[in-house]
Image (cartoon, rainbow, N blue to C red; front, side, top):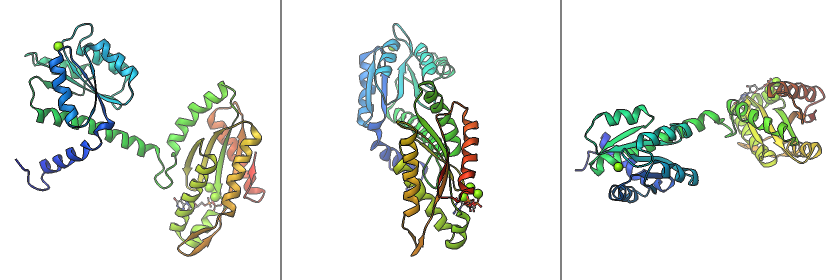
Length: 314
Ligand code: GH3
Ligand code: MG
Ligand code: MG
Ligand code: MG
Ligand code: MG
């Protein structure tokens, strides 16, 4: 049947058709001890362009998952030798949270409690054999869509919308982990705070949109010169950088190249020529906790402002 335009069913079909174009990015692992049942599901998935992997029991499924990246979904039978579908679901949930892997249980057994068992043990969905292809596709698509939605929401929650850099929340999480590694391995590194000079004046003189344009450009120059580090917009016109390098001199050089390029940049926004400078406070190879180092970097930044701006204080 052909659904009415813009009805829910029509929109669903549209989504399905659109998602098929991207399905090759999604790996699906089919686990069943019956090769006939397995092949049937594999055929259905291949028709929709999924990247398909197979295993004949739970133990083998865990092996495939360890070796193969990009698997987003496991479709598993219930009764299998060595490790059954419930056992597999349990093991999978110890290794992969719900936002990384969808699990769909399948069983031909008459007992209606199987679906509840699967779901209580960590599965996201359940299909009873025999199923019609239409139901199969609906459930698979829905579960893949859920994963993509979570991924997008997570990305948005960690990104600064204006500049595309990491946001404050993401920086504190990331930098904490990285810092521990650098200290443990004695990797030379630097933590810097940077702040656009007299930015309020730029907004006042050229308008808020021009100010936004400047923020984006500063982020661009950060990526160019400091791109290998953790770069974040902490808020307003304040940014943070955690960067590794050869030694203090080389790291300082990178920060200063960035500072200099911003100061000589010819910024044009709606026919207005804008010049801008940044001040930085930098801390090198400290063993202090992140919050303490940020405080020290902020003090140094204050010094750079006091000393006349457009410079780095350490
Ligand atoms: P200083 O050199 O001492 O840092 O002076 P400043 O003017 O840069 O510092 P101040 O803290 O007084 O002003 C920061 C300004 O940044 C004020 C605020 O309106 C502006 N600002 C904060 N977030 C945004 C934004 O997302 N877009 C724009 N256009 N302006 C912003
Ligand atoms: Mg079986
Ligand atoms: Mg400022
Ligand atoms: Mg200020
Ligand atoms: Mg500021």
